[in-house]
Image (cartoon, rainbow, N blue to C red; front, side):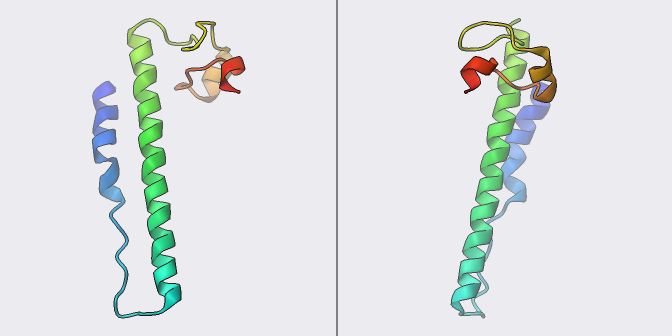
Length: 96
């Protein structure tokens, strides 16, 4: 599973190529639309990288026998919280 996560991290940028501005349309709205699309693509890529890094960190904690415990205080993370997000690494107190 760890290899799959790393492959996803490496390939995350392939599906979010830069948006190319149509040079035949000189309008200000066209440029603004292209810039907005690029910003959205960049944010999608950033979120994908963050999420995959969280999953990779959870797998590392699983390997180390530390999965299910807060990385800050070491207290056990509530099972319902882990069920909602298995990659979570903080107890409720430290997530705030």
